[in-house]
Length: 422
Image (cartoon, rainbow, N blue to C red; front, side, top):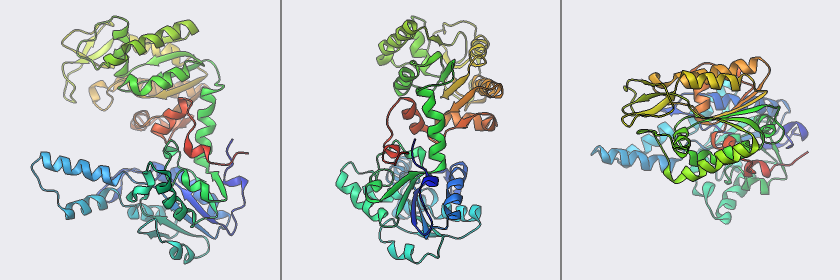
């Protein structure tokens, strides 16, 4: 297990902390503060230890990519996108100053703001004892995400000059080998995790090592290609794999079922067939849709059409699971001692096709109430449990989409690997 802030002395030290404040913004205002609040226990603990200073760093979106998309959108609409437009766009979406002001209100104390990650030694030194400073978006500097190690180290050394202790509490970026998540640890003498990082590992690790059995994994989402590695990893310990969402249709086609106009990855038909074979060899039950809610088009306005069997007519596409499938889900989920859920089982963003994912959320919550350990990971799954007001009924809702997925795949996450262990 990693060392955490509780394992090292922080009194009088300059603490440099990587947080994940990559929160939704609109017109320069925070829209969802979940990730900010998730870091508060670690921040509060650090400040209680009377450090010399606390410097926070985070990314917020990806300014270069976000601007490029905005320009392309404007060009498609036949509109100009001027330098002034770019600056307004970045101010509304990518600048961390509004986040630092939001954090100050939550903490009930001032949070100074630095307009760059470079050249802030004087600003750090000028902080009052126990003062907090937030650096501007790390991704405004190309060195943050540079492929070249020397480029990353340039920013990493600068960041390291602001702290004696490096704390990584940004699980959501732990799968990224960036300057502020990984390289910086090479230039700070002490490097530990925060409480959020510790909690994520505490819940996720047993799911791929020694989960309470039976383990039932619910894996959904659009594409097999993005989930095959996690399916293969969970196959080692699971008693049942529930496969839903768009990816289920590739598995159904691999079994020879007609799937109409449903989403399919033909390049992964063999992969799907191989996984079904591997599951059969291990005695792992694979639960695929037995019936569907279909539609003639992929649209929020589309009318749901009940498809009472596995086969989908040529004029329809699968959009959600039906009642027979939910009955099979119920039997498996309520028999579980541990549950992993990553990805919705239908297009839950469209009200007509949200029932399957809502019922899964309710079943996982019910199983948790009966004593099962439930871990929800992946942005869409988290959005679903929040939409249905069931997040508090789960054992653990991960803050990291890509990070939780890669962890469940059994990968070593670089942002964790650089931290000291007990």
